[in-house]
Image (cartoon, rainbow, N blue to C red; front, side, top):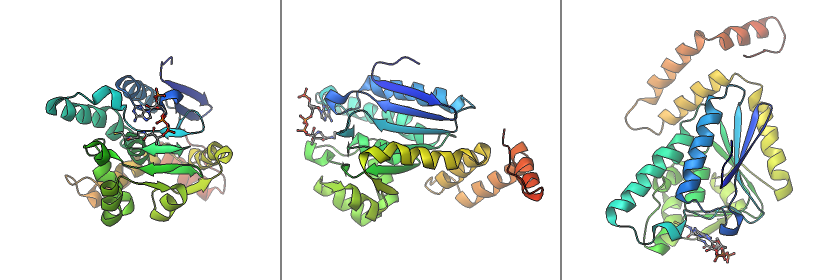
Amino acid sequence: MNFENILVSQNENLAVITINRPTKLNALNKKTIEELHTAFKALDVNSKIKVIIITGSGEKAFVAGADISEFSDYTTEEGAELARNGQELLFNFVQNLNTPVIAAVNGFALGGGLELAMAAHFRVASTNAKMGLPEVSLGVIPGYGGTQRLPQLVGKGKAMEMIMTAGMISAEEAKEWGLVNYVVAQEELIPLCEKLASKIIRNSSVAIAAAIKSINANYNNTVNGFNVEIEQFGISFGTNDFKEGTTAFLEKRKPNFE
Ligand code: COA
């Protein structure tokens, strides 16, 4: 896959997508969002790929937000379209992938950058990372799901404070708040994500996809999450992975998932 603004590498069952506009602190312009959509889509249907890590290039930023230079003269309609398109192509798209996505937050994750990290299935940060949703300081609000996902992750009060103050929190605070799962030195960030990925890769990717669907259902007002869980639980019983997983357990050996 050849892209202008992102790099995609694959090693066995793991893929790493690196947003690569370091001189713009990896800000998300339209082209980058389209490229990310294409890359995520292709990796998700690639049965060899079992985990995707998303990170930013350079040592300073994961993503410093949506590219402000692109939308500063937008109209009301163009603004709504920007948010709708972005949510569909990237943020909701990533959240609903079958393949687990880990955000390796290697520096500033601001605005659309934090929203992208929050759309991933979980987050790991380096000690220098700083996170915030500064949109109200620009006279706008988070438009890529930030007003929804931040309260889901940190609770309503903290989300209100973070969005209203437009302030940044440190990686350690983000961990305390439940926004990231781990904080490590920058050089240990990708190795830790790889280690977590290797644990995920050992398990049934079919079951993991069913778990993602069921957990996401908890945040979808239009469905009953318990019913989704029952349905996905039942579907698991018809899969080869279930047969292999349970047989391997009874035969006291490691499962060999397809
Ligand atoms: N959109 C477009 N360009 C951005 C950007 C964004 N969200 N964030 C950073 N950049 C660009 C800067 O314009 C600058 O480009 P230039 O060198 O061509 O002038 C380059 O990235 C480096 O950023 P700079 O501001 O010089 O770095 P800094 O270390 O002084 O500050 C930040 C870092 C992250 C604090 C600062 O860049 C910032 O506040 N960015 C915007 C964050 C934001 O509001 N995001 C939400 C957008 S909705």
